[in-house]
Image 1 (tube, rainbow, N blue to C red):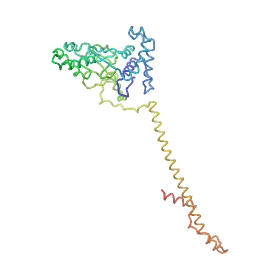
Image 2 (image 1 turned 90 degrees about the vertical axis):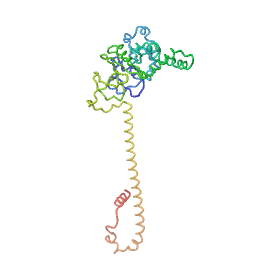
Image 3 (image 1 turned 30 degrees about the vertical axis):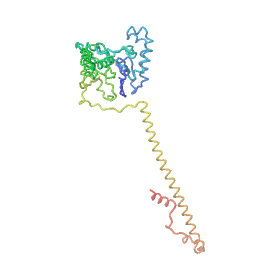
Length: 352
């Protein structure tokens, strides 16, 4: 298993962790569908604190191992977002040394790049040599100022043109020479961190070919896409599976499973579901209360009508009070009065 990236960025920490996962030096439980920065740093820190790992690192670093581990842990926060890298153009491991790069040495991982000039081109070799990118940028500024003067030397102007041409033609930070040197200088089955365009990725050499580990979260459910073959500077990417077989989208019928929710996602989904239930309950209670208020209004209306009816019938009842008129048959008029329940039913039909 490897760690995928859910937010775009350089993140050399991710590349370093994936190399250790592929080496089986560390592991992440299969129940975890999400791992945060703190947990990842803890795994790397545990690996460094394991005394058995001293055998993996250069003797010069092992001599002061505890201090080197402490320094590396201080650099971990910078590895989350990347750090300044100043390349040299004469070697795949050509970088200006910084404290951040010492972390890779502790894990016995090489940092490499493919931004190289043609070593058999004498003019470019002489103009650039072992200079870093920042040194070339400063040199271009100085040469640009000089070429506008009347005393500009022809050799300096030619050097300016060579440097400017190289940087423009290799703006992608990868050259054919760089690919060739990566193939020749990396060991077979070596896992390294590849730097290009301010991005850090895992590079692997398998049967003489170069592959980059695919870690974009967009490929989470593409189980047949694991590696991207690095063959041309500007060529189309060719993907392979875990066994380095070319990926053919025409024969990929894999259905994407439902995504596994991490703890934060599950909590959010539960909150949304609870909010929906609360809203439905509130609406139901509101409808019940409205019905009760309608019943109370109807009951009050019927009560007032009953009082009015009694008041209207009282004089007639007093005038007709006699033994002959007091018979039950004369006192009642069947079918002319509605019960209270019938009146309430009619009222509900009217308001609905």
